Structure formats: structure tokens, C-alpha cells
Length: 84
Image (cartoon, rainbow, N blue to C red; front, top):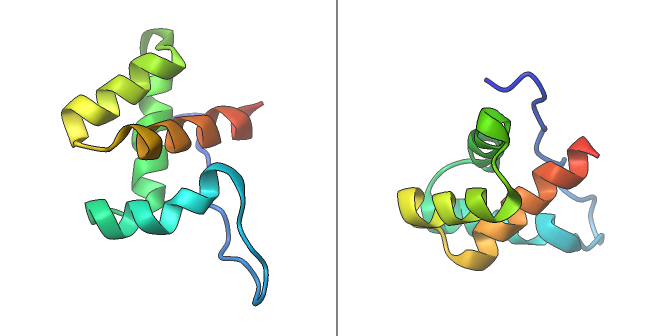
């Protein structure tokens, strides 16, 4: 597991709307059958390996795991933003 793990966001409180990359997370879980935490962990590990770029990791999620571009991009963007 990555030394710089990014945790999945807490579910929104009643009546609150999620915006940004996290707004894709419920759809990602439904579509691909894995928890968002699993996707965040995979992405964090990949970003740590040989300092892969944002788009390299997006491409990897698409080719190796079958994610659509928007979903892959949202996961990578969330991890990179959370890490600062």
C-alpha cells in the first residue's frame, strides 16, 4: 500500500451535493464493482511507481482495468489533489 494513502471521502450529509471528481465515485463503484477506496489505493500506488504522470495513470486505468476516461481522470485528479 502506498505510503501516501488517500482516503475515500465520507458520504455527504443529507441534502448536500458532492461536486468535483468525487461526484463520479458512486457511479464508479456501481459500474466497476470495486470500492472507491480500492481505486484510490491502486492509483496512489501507480502514481508512486517511477513517478508516473497524471495521464499515464489515466491510460493505465483505462487499458488495464477498463475504466472510461472520465472515471479514470476523476480518480487520478482526486488522489493528486488530496496529496497537494
